[in-house]
Length: 495
Ligand code: FB9
Image (cartoon, rainbow, N blue to C red):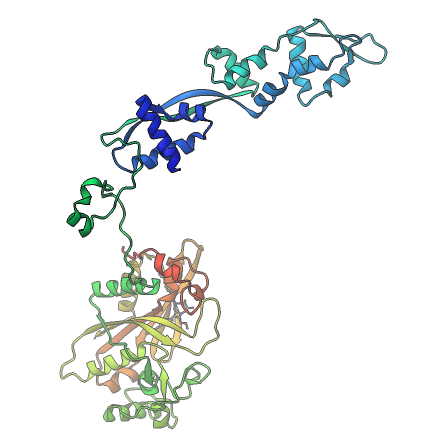
């Protein structure tokens, strides 16, 4: 390429300017290669200036090239007819690839005639002793770039698909302010040595490209789950909720189950559903008075409840597990609220990992992030819960909700929350909710006219929907393609 650049600069130096198309045609080079060379020279600074021009040009099609080489179709057919005894028409039509077109053209030119009286079939004879193949002569001119052929004739050849009209963009190149016939590579750095020696005076430096995009710095990337979590966090904060401290994956069975009035023989407390720790296997520090109240309400009831009438065991409550829901944290927070001198209404939320020993499938892993909202205030009802669910989901762009009676060990009444999915054209479950039972709240010391409403959903389900992920393993786990983490778009839940 360097020799082409220097060759071009020599031509400009001698002739004052250069037309890239003419130069390419005269030197037999590809025009785009010549244009590329001009662009390389322009990147060196003000060595040359160029001005784009467009012009129409005619060139031969492949069929036109055939005619140039072998003659027009009509001339080929004329040549196929025996000058003395003529030729059967069926043989003339088979004599070349375009014999049909050539035969009708030769007949209309008056070059041939057909005698249908012959016994062995129609026979073609020459009407003239010689012909001039004007089409071939004209195409030879087109091939040489001759522009004297009348426009109507060119259009006729275009109709016959022998020529094509192209708009060619070329460049008229002239000397620039810093013209030189040598292609000195420009420096990109001014070094201390250049300044000390003064050699910078003889060097040319590449202009700054202020529109160049910077190199993206190596930096961290937020996982889509964390982006969606930030958006949900924002929604809760806007609604006046305070975030609960969820930085303990390990929880005692007491706070995860017993404090929620979930009986010790409940199937969810079995190893098939819960991960139990071997070390540390147990917790030993619980608020003594509170623990006794929990034991009593499980065994004998109280606060208007009959209880479960079983022998409650401390050892069962001491077992350490990986928390199965962040409602365990809600229990801790509500206990603290109940221990205040004077009750003050509160709104809490949590978004963090929970663990369940479940059957894995395309949308379920043994862990997920639970989102939970809790409101504690005087005389709250199911109506308040429904109202706050509408307010919460409206911020997610969901207006149409339906509620289905459900069961949770720690809430009564409980409701599953459904939303109409416009894309799937069906109702989909978007969460669960309920009013915490008095057997859970009253042992904590909360006043008996205080009620607590709460709801929960997962972080993975909305994230999979937002980012179009079908298999949860594309989103989380050791098989995740990190490129997805680097390139996934931002998340907007605003409404
Ligand atoms: O997230 C769920 N679905 C969902 C949520 C959002 C969504 O899109 C956003 C609106 C744009 C789409 C779907 N679900 C709860 C429902 C189902 O996905 C369900 O199959 C899976 N559930 C998880 C539990 O599965 C073992 C989701 C998880 C869940 C379920 C219940 C709670 C929390 C998470 C709860 C609770 C609760 C109830 C009462 C009091 C306190 C907490």
